[in-house]
Length: 98
Length: 87
Length: 98
Image (cartoon, rainbow over the protein chains, first blue to last red):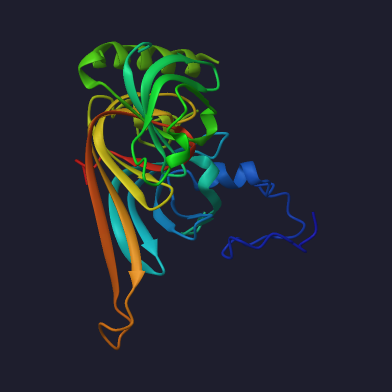
């Protein structure tokens, strides 16, 4: 629990070293923290989905709201609701402070 | 759906029409009286009369729409979703 | 178990609410479907009716414009009733409420 944090994907996560803060920094806690927040979901195909994370399950199936599909940085589609099958997910990144 | 005429489309774009004989838990499929849709591209299948298709290579199964009770499917799906949620 | 303000607890609820509605499905292999959803399961196997499939075939034409124009060939076909194997599914969305 030092501050040599090896997995860097969410860059805006500030980790105060000694303080026993509320979030322990486990993946599960991260995911709980980003529910209801804007996230970027990257698929293994390289396509990004940016939207508000409604919920997710143990397979990393994901429900997003107000979703934009980005391919090579260009918005290619918009969905009011979107369900993403978990096996396609590469990572979930917070798009706003959590 | 057994004994209906269906078209199974595989992930390698091969489409096979035939009479559905059986489906198992892995969605492996047995077809009778088969016919390959694009025989020019797959001439080697001409002699084959029936086949067993591994479920994992299936992309789609086209079904005869008039023999599908959609209300029944939706009710069954809701019931299954409820059971799934209880676990 | 509580998901912020939405009435949706897990991703599959989103799909359940789309039963007997027209949905948009994005599949592997640059395919997408639009059809009325009648059934699904935990693998995301789907049964759709009144389906239109769109297959994107992207080929790069260097001759057209100096700006490396990409022409997207689109093949469409319609199917009455279709079972879709879940492993090919990437995304499901009810397209109406955008």
